[in-house]
Amino acid sequence: MRTITILCFFALPLFLQAQKDTIPTEQISIAAGLADLSFTQQELDSMQQGITQFYHTYQSLHRQSLPNDVPMSLWQSPVVAGMHFSNQQLPIHWEMPKTVVLPTHLNELAFYSIPQLAYLIQHKKITSVALTKFFIQRIKQFGDTLQCVITLTEDLALQQAAQADAEIAAGKYKGMLHGIPYGLKDLFAVKGYKTTWGAAPYKNQTIDENAFVYEQLRKAGAVLVAKFTLGALAMGDYWFGGRTKNPWDLTRGSSGSSAGPAAATAAGLVPFAIGTETWGSIVSPSSTCGVTGLRPTFGSISRTGAMTLSWSLDKIGPICRSANDAAIVFNAIHGTDGIDELAVNRPFNYTPNKPIQAYKIAYSKNYFDNITDTSRNEWKVLETFKKMGVQLIPVNFPDSGVYNVNIMSIVIGAECAAAFDAFTRGNLDDEMTRQSRYDWPNQFREARLIPAVEYINANRHRYLLMQKVNALLQQYDAVICPTRGSGNQLAITNLTGNPVVCVPTGFDKRFHLPTSITFIGNLYDEGTLLRIAEAYQQATPWNKTYPKLFQ
Image (cartoon, rainbow, N blue to C red; front, side, top):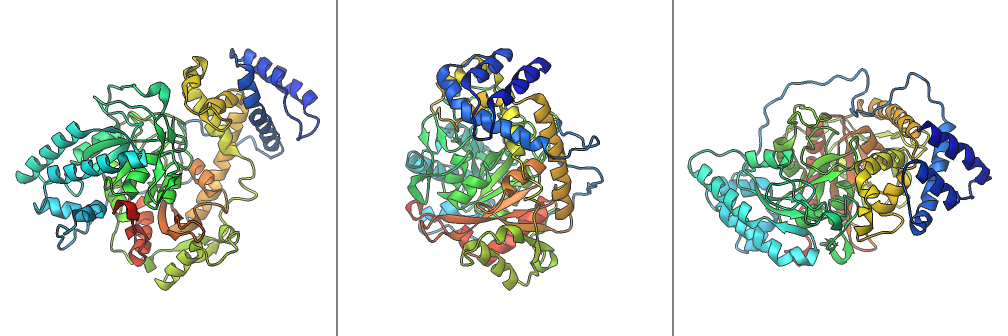
């Protein structure tokens, strides 16, 4: 590594007289050779711009002060020095509806909440088998339209549903997920079924393992009906079979990478689904498809049996139609089996009835100030909270002057390239269906030339970012932020590991597509965050508005 650094980065200034210059491909080829790699000329041409951008990022990092006592976060924990957390799990008083009836038009059942469906099952107004067959039929009817299904797990689902009915009949009711159908993003392993990771090189892959999250839901009595699409190797909404569609406009994609879980939940193909996020893969498709996405605190859910993209960034979370549904699902799946060494067991304290006025809520004034059109839905969210009697506090979310170098690209680039080392070396990347400059094959190649020193120091800068973000957040129960377009909060909170909830807020004026808002919370305090989001949803209709094509 020392030799590579000396040869490559002492030679590079000879070629970089100004930032507009680019690194010659022959120099990239020399550096690659020192790392025991070989690329074609076409691959080198594709890498050229990205390698040059990485070099300029290194230069920006070098211009910033980094005292010797700043640690790195190679084994990632979102906790910084001086933080303490309660280990007390308080009882959760879930609210079951007083009465629920089967709808006259059965398709309305597709958009019932988890508590509504649980009431019907518990009170034997519908069996789990009948409910499961209903959702399987919807998947068969609409799955191809949305291009959101990789594997229909029909046999397994009917077995699990029959078992749930037998257990309930015997008086062994397990709770609100007992007998409820759901779907998994197809990067979670389930014995007996393919786990394709959405990518052509792995479309026939089977893994003889059950993912932790699948086992947790099985124990809760939930019924797996499908494994849904993800963008290839957890990027975007393009997978080896096509592109997952947005239920609100089939000419558009669903975003990703939790493309299938978000699209299927929004269209009423399942009551909920499980996604993952490394950098926006729950938040972005949830926002695009108009559903509720919870990206929990880093390490809140064991990732055993899930595809690794980035060890210090990967997170698992539920995609649902409401924050209350997300709370029910998170309660079942959080924790660890001890195999994922970065996962922890923390209490989940959720109080559905706590008055919203009891919370101390801030909003990111610096982000909202960037939205000059005050008729936009982000501003309407603030008005809604004020009408609920909340005294919103303006704050400047740490961004400009704090996150002024693209730390995320270095961290995610190095880790993803390492996770798919054999994939690149063995030329499996050539089998991927998409090969643009911005797709994984090229990004893995670019990231192979990130020096170890730069990766480590990027993580040390990350630690400083964690300190600054948590210093702000610990003063409040939540901070309201625009989801997109006005700052770097998505990258920042993925780096710090803080939990966020993304909820729908209506539709934009130009395309009439869903818009959203993001609530950012304190580490391991998903309960508070979900209660605040649920209060907003109780005051607005947007999580109860569904795409017409699927009603």
